[in-house]
Image (cartoon, rainbow, N blue to C red; front, side):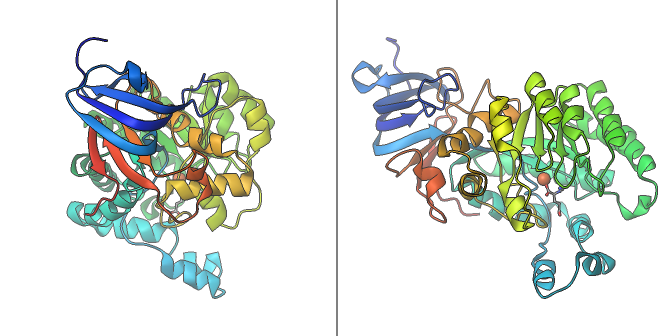
Length: 410
Ligand code: NIG
Ligand code: FE
């Protein structure tokens, strides 16, 4: 390459996370990486580097693709620490539900919050995620459960991407729970979601993908399929909260619709795994929810590995089951609780997470032509990212070629 690049990162070790790399991390020590027009233009040995308009000495840091948190409910109002405390003091889940708690308390708080309040409560959570090297974030709706409130959540999600240095992928989760106005009329609510909520939200450009909670306490397999048909009619990709508490054959369903991902998966069957493998549907694992709910059934990691289903890891950041704003901690939990390897954990927070959003052609690995979304780490080796608990070794972050300090305050 003879033409000068915009910026050259030097004195850096790369974990490229290219899926075909012989070494799973795709390690390149003492390397350099060049950026032009916000994209990766070149990477290789320092001595072969192209001329550059500017240079950034990384001081021997490791560089990975920017992390991707591919499953969050980070936009919501209020929290539920009061319910958590009550449960630890002996209250049953039913007691709390009878007092109007659980997911409906977050729905109430979110419905009551105006756009600025919703954003003001959500931005600090996002900032914590971004301080750990996250450059792409998926954000779901699902605490509005009515057209105006769902729209407010999705607009807030888009606004997050304007106010902070992060690429946001939005997911419409209107079928997250049955709102009180539709008590006893779940089929009518599904019709509302399909015909009166999804089309205008998609028309406003607020929906990158469609999700549902397929569960005994959520929506049935047949109801979920109606939502997938509505998504398909609008040309939108689907994903699913599947087999979290029981096997509803949600994974088979979402795979049949060519789904981007099936998420949670503690009660996933072999038939579900086979269907996902055939369809290329990513398994999004959410160890924060497993931990916080004191679940004891682990997802079938060995069988997923055997079937070569790509495994992603996400925070599931939400006030009820995973009040977590650390993707690095989620990686540690996936290794400690389920014996993922640190390499699988980093793949799960980069290239496989990008695939779960349909963005793997553009982000998730260090490859020429991809967006220059990068994270720089003060670590001895890539395994350190999943190893250390509660420390943040992120030195700086690069969004589309622009370098920023790791810490973000809002
Ligand atoms: O991903 N599983 C369903 N939904 C969320 C939790 C919602 C809540 O309790 O607020 C989850 O775990
Ligand atoms: Fe979730």
